[in-house]
Amino acid sequence: MRRSMISLTALAVLLSGCNLAPKYVQPVSAAPAQWPQGAAYEPATPGEAGMPWRTLFADPRLQAVIERALANNQDLQASLAKVTSARAQYHVERSYQLPTIAAGADATATRGLKTSASDSQSYNADVGFSAFELDLFGRLKNQSREAMETYLGTESGYRSARLTLVANVAASYVTLASDRDLLALAERTRGSAQRTVDLNRALHRSGLASAADVASAETTLEQAKSDVASQTTLVAQDRNALELLVGGAVADAELPGSLAELEAKIGKVPAGLSSEVLLRRPDVVEAEHNLKATYAQIGEARAAFFPTISLTSALGLASTALGNLLGSNAFNASGTASVSLPLLGGTNKGNLEYAKAQREYYLATYRGTVQSAFKDVADALARRGTISDQRTAQDRLVAAAQRSYDLADVQYRAGTDTYVAALVAQRSLYAYQQTRIATVLADLTNRITIYSAIGADESLARP
Image 1 (cartoon, rainbow, N blue to C red):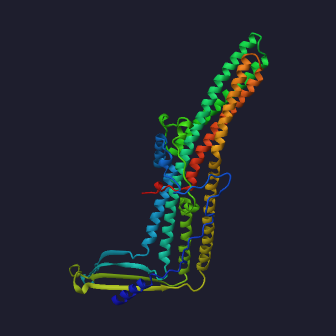
Image 2 (image 1 turned 120 degrees about the horizontal axis):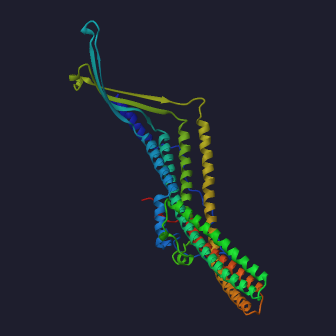
Image 3 (image 1 turned 180 degrees about the vertical axis):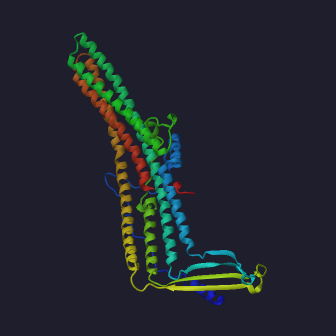
């Protein structure tokens, strides 16, 4: 019996390399090899694409806020729990490839009711493994491989969640700075409009201005008051959104100053020449692991068509007397083998068809993820290629509007022009100043978007 067990074990070792899963070949990239070119894009520059977030965001307050978010964000904690669960499931599947060895002991005593002749005792002690499947066709191996790919996919998903969180915190931070700038602008405009209203009322009382001039001045004042109320709300909501991402309160000292202060401390992420960097983007890596898992699933489904061989063995001691349990005559061994083979019916064919369909689904998902990643980067690069020109034009527009308003205001106060000209110039200046703040926000947001779209931040990988 022992020789038979050794032979079966040797056979299992010889056949352990049998794997019915198809060989995985990485799909050809579904995206163009190079970034797009044209009037909307800057000339491509060689070099490593991507940048660690601590290098991109040099502002100490923003860095501290991001660190807290990475430690406390609840959505990220949920993603981490998924990783831990997938890893535990992989360990479970991996354990099926190895025999489970257990030891046990028992004692039995029987006493007769009338005579002691019917009394008996028995003692047993054994160690062995039960129902250990010989993985001749790779069924268990592919189950384990599928679980491993799922685990690796959740690892990449967790890294993707960290990347997204960093980008979202930074975007919320600069949005808060932008709304604080807009609030400050509305407050300055309100103060200027209030002085204009006071002047027009005084002139009206002196008969030097019409009631229409007073009413027109009041419209600008009330608009500014409305904007102050609206921006005060937005600033509070921006802070709430930031604190939700951080997972706790953000102190006043940690809040951003102006966009001008942040701009010098937010870098520009290089995109490199080749789109191949996207294959390292966390969501693309996750999609590829999901695809790889379907190959193992096919191997598992194919193996189900072949015989399943299970072994059970035990080595033990048995005796009617406890004192003789360790004697040489007490030794015994047993071993059994069972074979099962599906002949008719069952779900094997359906499972194989399902596994193949899953492969096609995740192949399309992988390709779609790569294409979507390329579009994300291309769109962001198109914005970066034109934002500098837009900002320059916007700065000149505000400067010209400021000169126009100053001249109109002087002429009105000197009595050489109507208040309508000054009012139009003031409203135009206010609108252009608001647009300039929005343009600066678009620039900084674009830098964050490129960082997130490229996704090449190895510093976010779990240690």
